[in-house]
Length: 291
Image (cartoon, rainbow, N blue to C red; front, side):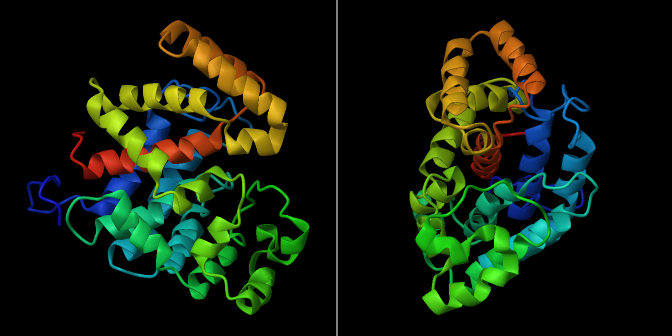
């Protein structure tokens, strides 16, 4: 176990699973994060409210604890998604959990969490892990883009029905991520969680309450590249405009707050960026950022 972990009055320690749940809670406790459900926008998005995210964070705990105990990443992820789905809002944190499951597994192995450690975890995944990934789509509706024609039989929206084709091709979960072109979360899997660790360092090196650090890091990341979910739902022109407008607002609290209101009103939810920030918050907590 890492030495920095918080010791409670009863001698207990907050380990990787608890830090992952805390990161999920801090995601909706940080504001403003333009377009996201958060403490400032509890009821502004018709389908999802903050209570659903809180329940999802609690429900994911069993799966995250399995990851911390050394269970296969696919099993841990599918169980976390199943628990997350036990609320009335629908999909709240699927993408977050796809990033957190291997990070928690890597953190639980001891020493400092690093890109090399999590790369070892994801590159060691199996076909069985990939099958569990597809089973997770049975629990909630997830917004994903259309696959290439030659991968139509592996469309994630088919859920468990795609598993025979997956097994025929012998694809591991890492292989599936490598073939998911244009998906921001899949990119983390195949690049050593590069952006996750860079954003975690920004959170660590910032000052003030962690919720403020997360908000600033969110806007900075949104300004750097297109959000996959925005692109999937609204198209490339809107995704590019969101990135440009975030860059213009960055560093100006009033402009960020105004952008937040406009995105919420327009139904623009940069959810993939929120996934990345949740993963980065987890890494920052594992590195010893205090709460």
